[in-house]
Every structure is written in C-alpha cells, then in structure tokens.
Amino acid sequence: MDIEIKSMALTGRPDDEERTVTKAIFTARVGPVQLSSCAIVRQGDGHVMAMPPLGKFDKAAVRIRDDEMYMEFRRLAFEAYDALVDEEPDAGLLRVLGAENESLRMAGI
Image: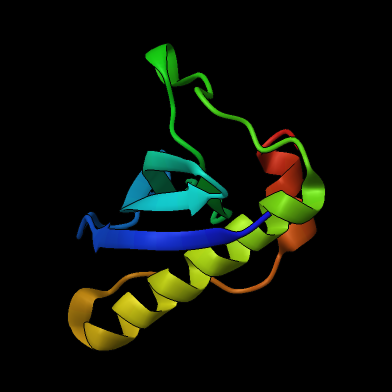
C-alpha cells in the first residue's frame, strides 16, 4: 500500500529527560486513507517514534498492524522530519536515526 507524508510542522518543544515530548505533527496518506495528527515523539529515555493519531486518553486511535507498512510509515516520517530539522539547524532538535526494532517494541508492534 502506498504511503505519503502530506505535511509536517515542528513543535519547537525542547527535549525533556523525564517525559515524552512531541517534536513534530504530521499528516500521512496511507492508500486512500488520510491520517491527521500523526506525531514524531521523543520519550524521556531518548527513544524516538513515529506514531499514528492518538485518541482519548492517549490510546491509539489508529494502529498499523503490518510491520512492513509501519516501517515504511516510520521511514517516510523520519525522512520528512530530518529534512525540516536540516532546514532549521538552530532548532536544537534531535535528529532521528536507526533503532527500528526498539521503536517497534516501544510502539507495541
């Protein structure tokens, strides 16, 4: 299934070693479905994840259950995030690299 990152905006929030921080919000198109309010988040322990939209009480509103599809979603989101960070080198934002297996585990996939 085709995945495309439609738009992304940096939040400008600084890293916090004690809590999860949303670094960017984005919209993704997965096949014919548009997912608004997806996020790049950095956890206090340093793990970075690309997440589909959350629902009430921070529970997943959408889950990407296919590992290959999630990895493509994640790769494209991180590429878009890196491109934004590269355009704003003074933003002090974490560059997202590697750790696919750990991010999948952290996302419960």
